[in-house]
Image (cartoon, rainbow, N blue to C red):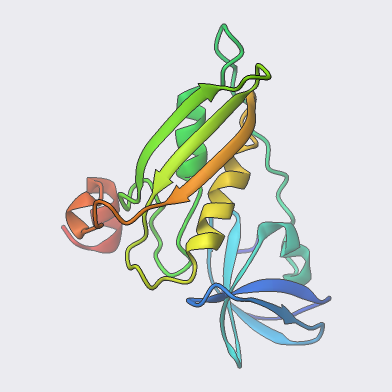
Length: 183
């Protein structure tokens, strides 16, 4: 994967998520973009019209290699997904404006695995955002859900955004605080 931050030319049309509104937009082939950061398989890019999140599945449009996302984790004896593998996947989810994953930011309040009536397993996650007005909430939740569904044994996932308790900087892990220069 190329990680330099030089300008790129889009080779095809892509759907992106505008930052911070969370609105879907279309960027067209031959448009110039600048890569700001690559985190969790997603790209934060800038055009003359603003900042956007580009999904890793569209990395080829900016000359990057599309990474195949697989999780090689064993299921538990009863076929349930390994909770640590789920947490590992959540650590691959980033707010596109903050270079710290949602777990280390303290945004994930709970993660529960339950057996469904059909015998499959469902993962329920309750998370928050750093600010109530963040339009990226649905995009971040969808990214988390997609990554959770890659874990062997997960049949369904629900990522719910909650505002109780209100998030504050004391919820950031020590590792997250170091990355942000807070300690």
